[in-house]
Image 1 (cartoon, helix red, strand yellow):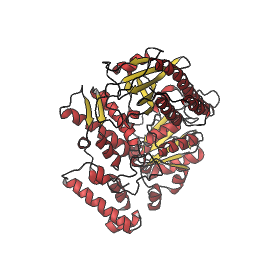
Image 2 (image 1 turned 90 degrees about the horizontal axis):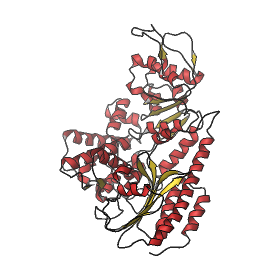
Image 3 (image 1 turned 60 degrees about the horizontal axis):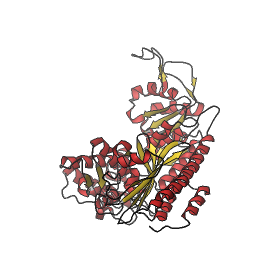
Image 4 (image 1 turned 180 degrees about the horizontal axis):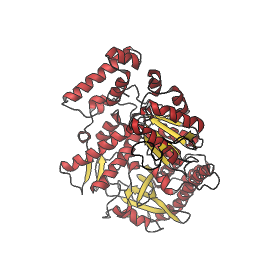
Length: 528
């Protein structure tokens, strides 16, 4: 094999450069692939009983979303069992964990190839593994095993640098005797994706997390607002306290005051004991008000008092109680429109939206669609006891072309249904199963030129830049009456909005609808 000189120098230069962890890791695997002139390189980190890809080169993008259970992959288990490099010669009978995940390869099973890997340690603790694969008749030399050991030292140094940078950021958040964020919390807050728009959002959230400012998360249904709220909490000075979630849409108005503010014994019929409200339960922590646009007007005034004075008053109690609680709220509604029509208090809106953050819809996150699809496929593969589950290239194009009105939640459901359909059609769990576009059952009439589509400047690597959703998604021959009706409704609303320069209130009047009902219908149809 031909070795490329100077790669080690570029790796060392990256160690002292101010680079985000994801970029440093990707440049690292790129350099290793160039040095060994191999076809695929994977950098994986231990995550409980699994290995999680940190960076990869030469494998399908969806592989970044996978979680490789160590007990199910003998090659990975062998690499982790020793500190010396391990080689799997061509023809080795052990299944390859990357079967079906090779980039731009027509075959489902990896061709006969040479493979080697080495375990990685950080401060004496097993951290992960580095894997290399060579196809097309290329093979590694015995001397490459020694070189891989040297590269492992560079990789471990790069990981250590990134870890130190992360620890340094957490130290800036320390208050008094607080301890750094525990591992279990870090695991819970994982957000999958590498798109530019997502990385910029995470940087913004990390900055605002250090303050006590109320944050309003805005975004469509299914974008994962709760997950982003959790990240803010776990990165904030309040992370030692509880994160209490309140689904305002599920609060009956008759019980809302008791749920939020608590009550004392005898306050009303059935109040047999004192009860702590959700706000008080979040003392020194964070209160997450999900779907805050559905909060009853009668409760909004009392919540405003809490935000203004830091006080609550339990139902049936005369005295006030001091609370110190960070407020994060979220909604998929147009709160400004609700303020105009009187269904939401303007003063509360301004208190909650001190720092508004827009969570981008899935269609604006480019290549994250495939990474998330890979994550959901791996979850279903493990749950259903399948050997391997992958997407065909036409299926990948269909996913990237779809508008995803239900966002990440809808993608998760599509992947789950596709996996189940494979088995219902007779697929063998022990085979490498490929999902074709027809199994996705995407409703292609939902996919149309969209005012929210991301431009290529937002994520130059995104797969949406030069594709038309209507041309690339799989065809649907028949429509039910409901589907045809919804298609007509979409067409009428879009046309009327265009005529009225995007004025939703005027659009509602022209269609003979209440404004709030039009917003609900638009969300149901995937227009908002």
